[in-house]
Figure 1 (cartoon, rainbow, N blue to C red):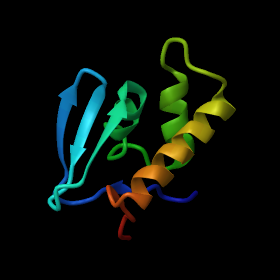
Figure 2 (tube, one colour):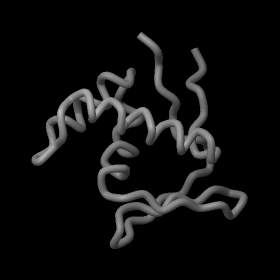
Figure 3 (cartoon, rainbow, N blue to C red):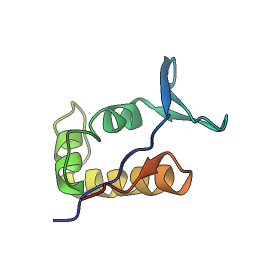
Length: 90
């Protein structure tokens, strides 16, 4: 089972109307929606993409589990590409 990345060091978060503001030390920021905020808050607990997708699938009005996995994967990729996530060190 592949381990998912963790939030990068120095990220400050702030709840906003749209969801969650992520702010890096460099001044770069990203606003994620409420579903993204839900996933962000579970990155420290979840050990795999499947665990993250399962948590998402338990939300009211959640899409199919396969769609939850795809959403979680895109979320992780987007944040990793933007430098808000780092690989977990073994």
